[in-house]
Each structure stands twice: as C-alpha cells, then as structure tokens.
Length: 298
Image 1 (cartoon, rainbow, N blue to C red):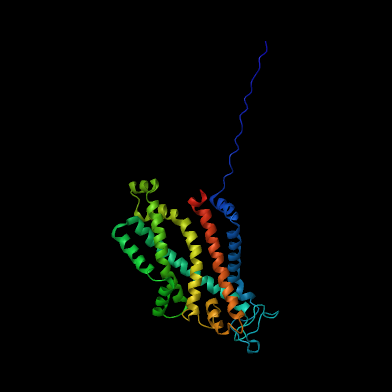
Image 2: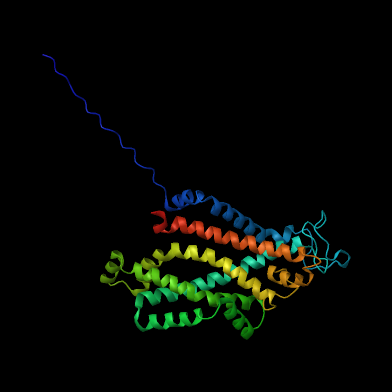
C-alpha cells in the first residue's frame, strides 16, 4: 500500500518595498519630468545667486561709455546697456536680488498668514469673522495696486517692497490654511488630544499644522513666481530698487527707452523674469501632483 504525501507549497509573498516619506516623495517627483527639469533650473538659479557676484566677468555697476548699447558679442555675450555695463554680469548679480526679495516676502507672508489661518479655523467665532472679513477687504484690491499703495506710504526701497509683497500674500495663505485647519480639526487624533486636555497651542501647531504643510509647500512655490512679477513691477515703476541696482525690474525700466534701437537691453532681463517665473510655476504644479492626495488617487 503506497502512501502519497502531498506537499503544499506556500507562496512566499514578497513584501512591497517601503520607502521613507522623503524617498517616496523623491521617487514620485522624478516622474514629473517637466517639474523635475524646472527644479534643476531653480537649483541653478540658487547657485548663481550664491556665487554670481564672484563669477561675473565685469563689474555690474561700473559704466563703460566706450561700449554703450552694444549688441551681443564674444566680449559681451548679452550686450551692454546705455551706460556700457555688461548685461550678463548684471543679470548674474540681479539673480540674488530677485530671489532674495521674492523668497523673503513670500516666507514672511506665509508665516503670518499661516498663524492667522490656523487661529481662524481652530477657534472660529468672532476671531474667524474678523480675520476672514479683513482678508476679503484686502482681496478687493488688486495685488499690485495694494503693493503700490503700501510702498507709496512707506517709501521706495527693496525692504519696503518685501513688506508690500508680503502684506498682500497674507490673506491668500490665511484662507488656504484656514480651509486645511477646518478639515484637520475633525480628525480623531485632534479630538483625542482635546479630550486629554492638551493646550490649544500644542493642538494647533503639533497636530493640525503638519496637515497643512503639503498645501503650503505647493502654494509657497507658486507664490514665489507671483512675488517676482510684483517686485519687478514695483522696480519697473521706480518704487523698488534704485536705477543703478542690477535688479531685473529696474533693468527693464532703464532699457524701455531703447526698445526700438537696442532691444536686447529689455529682452535679456525680460527673458530672465519669464523663465524664472515659469520654472517656479512648473515646480508648483509638479509638487501639487505629488503631494495632493486627491491628485495621487486619480
């Protein structure tokens, strides 16, 4: 009598490789090809902002009246302006000014707006009404018009441009964070923290604030592009950087009189503004696709 032994082989389930949140973000972001290459361009701009003044082939402030309004050449690859200053050197040095002004103003507006938005959404009531109605009043004014009014009161200068751009950024951040706070405070872990007697400050910034970070990162990135346009516009109108400063907006303003005879004086800083704003917007779109749960589930 033969006995047949049946061996049941269990299929080995290979666990799916788990990445850390940072690693998972990087893997997903690399699949956003357009946003990835735009981020490389922004990284290049940051490097230029750091080392630009040291690698500029010419002094961006020193005039050379023997080389005024020269077109692009081997000596001056982007040409010269009406004072004979090398445009390439001025754009390199102006990268630091443009990025520092726009980034500082957006971060300042983000900090103030985030605090107001969390308080508005968490406490509600009269505080919510005051903050939101104040935001509505500020939304009634066009951003650039509001910035012009603020700079007109404070006086021209890059520091006042930072304040002006940050002020009109606050309502947008406050409204964004308020919406995320209203959604986050309904979560179970927030209710548990309340029932355990956790202080409001701890609940707002330890439990609710992390739920708003992904939306903030996306909005900050895209808002920098808006801040670059606003700051350049103020400098173009003579309310920002002084005319001799190699600010991209001031360079546009100085070169507009020569648009018909030496168009490169206007085109070069204009192209720099266009590419930089486009890069930040593309990176913002890519970050939204990676960080937004609704987008990832589609």
